Length: 214
Image (cartoon, rainbow, N blue to C red):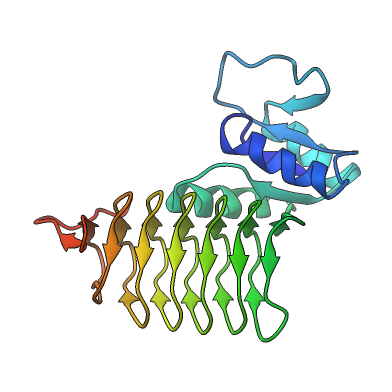
């Protein structure tokens, strides 16, 4: 497995692979950072150019996961490394609890330790479900949406694609959130939010400018 990125969230993904007993062929990819060691934790190779990434995919393991946050960045990197013959792969912590009945998790999703996803939940491709999040029944989450640690989404909600829900945010039952919405840390969303908005506060209120999609 190749983890795209070698800092921050990528280290948390490594811990999930350790929990899964799946670190034998793990490498990291980072062609941007200049202050990294030759090997992370003196064990894991850091690939630093595209040609070596291609070699890894063709000769060792074609699976990869994105070890960075930010929805647009995750999508861009997923598409880039799929073109190199990598296979975008979902990584789910064995210490997360994912519903057994009619719950679907798409490709390239990261579900981290302590998260609880109940039944009749749909999680789109490329999503990041961070530490200790909860997602209630009959909820649908679009592609490449990021839930920061401790986000709680109630039942019968719909969350669009390319959203960011900040740490500790809460979405009340039956609320619909559009695409490319940013919810501030600690906000409580009590009513529907249309596309391209930033909301903050308790209850969450829309700021006077739209979110910008890169």
